[in-house]
Length: 207
Image 1: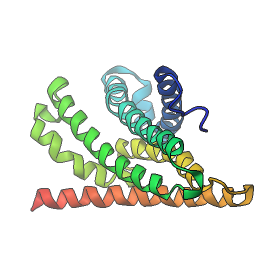
Image 2 (image 1 turned 90 degrees about the horizontal axis):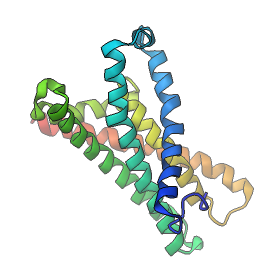
Image 3 (image 1 turned 120 degrees about the vertical axis):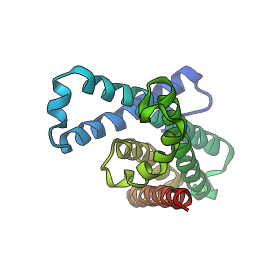
């Protein structure tokens, strides 16, 4: 994986590779989300304002969030393996990456929601309302019952190979299989951490 996400790569190539990973994780999850919502696929297939709003949401919220979080994650990965001996392991990288993903995921949603209120009149054009709905929305994203859940799981899938690589450094093929399982568990913990932080923000707002 290092050959595709190395600090020695030109920034355009690095960004292209991150964009490809982001699209490969985002698009299948979007398809699943649309299929799971009753009548949603039919509504989108008819075109019109519903399709335009959906595409705008993905283009201005979904892809930027997934791309930026993944970009930062792969930068952390590339920097870590270039500066840290493999024998030290990758737990530090995983912890740093998890903190980054939670913080940046929430921050980007807040920024984009406020911008959407300003530019597109979303949330009744109220920036305050836009900020207030961020935490409740993200608190339920792990349940995959809103479109932010798509973006969350796309971000988790982007983290999966990083965590697996970090956990399998210097190991044989047998432990590598366990590394992927451990990486999946780390992604589950990441989703839990985001949910807990978002719920904490909800309680702060209501208090």
